Image (cartoon, rainbow, N blue to C red; front, side):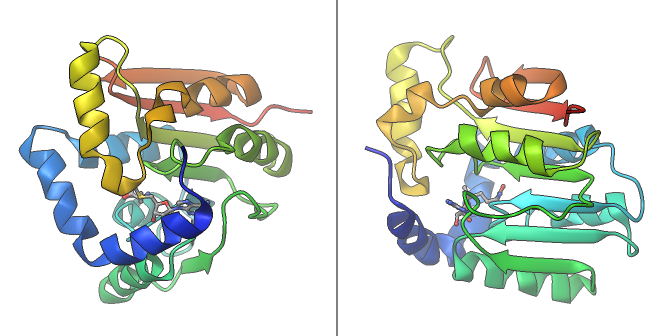
Length: 217
Ligand SMILES: C[S@@+](CC[C@H](N)C(=O)[O-])C[C@H]1O[C@@H](n2cnc3c(N)ncnc32)[C@H](O)[C@@H]1O
């Protein structure tokens, strides 16, 4: 069964201090997570001065790419459920001297988007939230027409042998991956609610970078 919000908050409060070093493990087995973060940010087609929201921003590993895209005149809003993850993101922004990063402790299921946001990013965050379809449907309604969305996600790799996919899911249990990950497809939800959708699978379907545009109503 999927974790509750309280279970997520409790687990990520414990993971916060080891989250960034934990990313090295992915890198050690050849996963180019940083390159996919960058590709997702590029897919947003942000301009200097733009406002962008990073849903489930965690420790702020996307912040360098987002800041490079919107510059000092832009606005970056990181939204996360877990205060300990946000503290790390805040430390990262402060250390880099970025004064245009706002960090909001909120449940992404209830978060209201700023009316002027031009971009919405989510990396490794949507697939673990059961109501991601509702979240994306609301984003498509609340964000202005023409705003861009980009998502990088690990997903159930249908082209892998089942035993290997099960093993990979089991290894990711501490991050909130539960057996119902088999049915979680945020990219399909993006295709339902956005237009000009593009998707690129990596690692034989174990990862996906998907982007789209908010349609005109
Ligand atoms: C695997 S981490 C990904 C963090 C970051 N996006 C990255 O790419 O490194 C998942 C994050 O989603 C956050 N999260 C989980 N459920 C959430 C929710 N309902 N609303 C907001 N954040 C949530 C967790 O606190 C955690 O920081």
